[in-house]
Image (cartoon, rainbow over all chains, first blue to last red; front, side, top):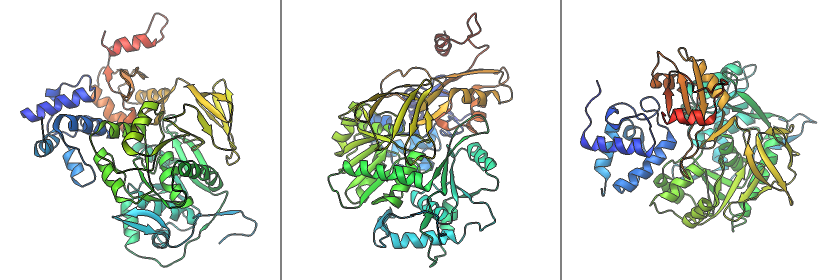
Length: 91
Length: 442
């Protein structure tokens, strides 16, 4: 069984599915603790770029990847949602 | 050491010890220091009669550059797998018995033991300095060997076309690249140019617009951004502020004129688009914001054929057949009129639909498969490939996980739908409209 999504995680899951055209993936079915990239949802760096754009539009801040946090931030829906909650300036 | 009678070409076009070659950890690396780093790596490379082919997996561009120069200096060939997916690297290793791998950790370990040895800087012109691979049929990547004289030929013209776009004609050009050094375009622009041109390169490979802006701000001017339409589109779409750039280079996929103009408006410099392939290296360029035609590098000849275009140049080993269909125009110019339909391109990487289908069919449980590229639903959207798969015992996720071991992530079908049967017509064929209908689940 996958863990339950919080409201913020659900909103981010919907943004991911819409922005990346993940047909056949129901936002509510994304396991918040499963990896987003490679295994898990199977996203790649092209998706990361598109996602970064959508996140900057919706939440008003720019993602950075040039530190060790990158691996942690993108490791799951839960960690990315937490990073957004800390850094968001609008929305 | 060079043997009498063997033509050699220098490892560094400018061997001046105080010239910068890279930007690392917030400071320039001068050639003198770079040489000592190369010597440290040379000291740890396998010695004859051990194999002489390096698979360079370094993520850090500076470490890649050091390892590459070390291989050149001792006459080893560098192998460039089409991606760093495990199976792709394993295929290349299997095809080159006993080749060795080098990565960031191995270079770090070497640099921790400084060497004062001098390195060989005269490279025999006919040394095979690298082999590029494109994904071929399962387990057998196609190979494209490059000689030192070949890459010297195209590199000189790359350096000219970049310098022509920059107002400053004398200072060292500082480059930041968003592409990996293992990709042939990244190799030409961010590895060969620092060795053979008056250019120094940033060690990083920033992804997001905010990362790119921060890395650009680190390096001196004139500065050049080496990138792709995917990254440039993200830059134009973001609210991020950028330091002024003196030129922008793009390749891997065609860039449209409006995006080129928007990039120049945002970053400042002129946009130089490069045309080439793993098979040929770059052989033409254009200033995309103002011209639609490509300008051939001096000496390059194109010959349109039924199945593509034959490309030749004085520095080539032999003519190369590309799948692009071109129309020649006066003044050494040409326009592209399309591509043979089996080859597809996603985010600048090319693959064959036949090959992707074959790879799907090798997965136990997959009975039938069709891979195709749906139309872009909007300008600027990345066109992925889609797949219909008949596999009664598997889920789409299971098929994708197996496929991911051998295929670059850019080509993982999205969506990959498990279907009861392929939508064949009465003749048993798979018309495109049937595939698209099945994709829409009609």
